Amino acid sequence: MDNIFRKAIEDTLPWLSTFGADPSGGITRLLYSPQWLETQQQFRQRMADDGLETRFDAVGNLFARLPGTRYPDEVILSGSHIDSVVNGGNLDGQFGALAAWLAIRWLKETYGPPLRSLEMVAMAEEEGSRFPHVFWGSKNIMGEANPADVRDISDAQGIGFVEAMHACGFTLPVAALPARKDIKAFVELHIEQGRVLETHQQAIGVVHAIVGQRRYTVTLSGESNHAGSTPMSYRRDTVHAFSRICSESVAKARAEGDPLVLTFGKVEPQPNTVNVVPGKTLFTIDCRHTDALALQQFTERLEVDMRQICQQENVDIDIDLWMDEAPVPMDAALVAQLTTLCKSENLNYRVMHSGAGHDAQIFAPHVPTCMIFIPSIGGISHNPAERTHMTDLAEGVKTLALMLYQLAYKEL
Image (cartoon, rainbow, N blue to C red):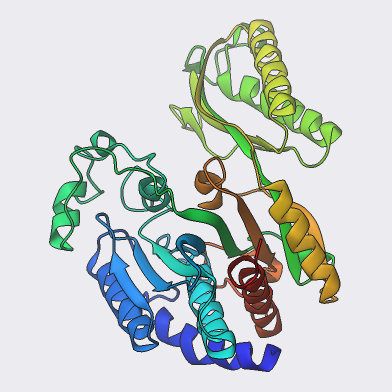
């Protein structure tokens, strides 16, 4: 079976990766771009040639359906997003969509029609790389998208979201699309985008939760002054205050331990010149954890500690918590079923959490959802160097196919 999926991947992944191929390497396939549209159209044609029923929804999500014989109105859905970051790799997102197609094609050829309908989805967008909006594809499927949120936004070239949408033949809905009620389960295959599986030399990750995230923009205000004539004791140095905040916070995060992670990803000191004490510094904080209470408690302690440090350094502080996303657990029954499957097939697996966000987190509050991870070489993603060994790619498609078989071909 592994050889069958390996050959299928070798025949299709290079083909799919030609659409939106970046001249400098990797893929640039942004929402409602010509490259995005060509990908969806070509993908649709290939799946139609396989005898699947294909369609676009109102916003450009692509579906390919294998109708069920006994419960046609009960859908087992699998797939991922088809868009990419700028100059990204050829696995993030699109391999999950490709894997769903290959798995359904194999099931059709091997077992014929399922009891429940099987659908593959290549979701229009997840990354937010072109427009300042994320999960546009999955949010529309689950009734969470608000057209007003995108009506007046534009990309970096000033092209409006609605304009780009129209150019691809789609029209912004007047109101939010209703959530689909026919989906009985959603299974997403994705590369890990980390090094846990590779480090432990394991091929499959059974995801039990997607981390919650809290993101901050923090502004420190002190006083810009002459670097030579301002004594150390007189200074209101915001970079020094930031350095204390960063160092002490990271130490606290390390003491807290896994699965908590903390990142200071952006720092902008002003005036940012060699001979002036920096009177203003803006920085960001990204903190993630699988437990909502632990995330809240840790970040609230950080806020208190930051204010104390700034008081000691005679620096003012403004803390803007602009993202507060709760962790999203996967469906316990599906996680148990997938774990049992991995055991019965003697797969080298581990149960783990996802430190990155995925479309599965939009589905999970509405329908039973689970995720399958496969390793990322070196943990590299969002990069043309993004790679996964072919044996692991094939193992992932096989695991997905066996899971879809249980959900669609067996009485529940």
